Amino acid sequence: LIGNKFIPVIFGSEFIDLGDILVIMLLNSIVTGFNSIIAQEFNIQGKPLFTLIRVSLSILLFIFLAYIFADFMLIGITISILLSSIFRLALSLTFLRKL
Image (cartoon, rainbow, N blue to C red):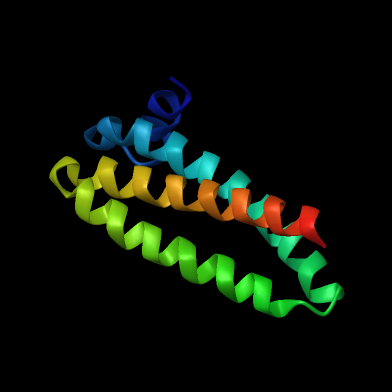
């Protein structure tokens, strides 16, 4: 898709297989940006404990998912990163509604 067109231009044709990784990491960057905005809201309201809880749980989830997807190597680790970021966003939205 998009990643397969940009990878050869930026890094060379020997890295063409990393296009899917690039797309997943770009999606992760978007999700992480939303997470950062919501984390600022917790800090503004004086609830930094919510940020600590959601980050700690997402790290634990990442470790678990990385172990589960270890057979898929690099793509498995990238999917683990994306899923833990989505989980962190879901926790953030849940905590935000409870405030």
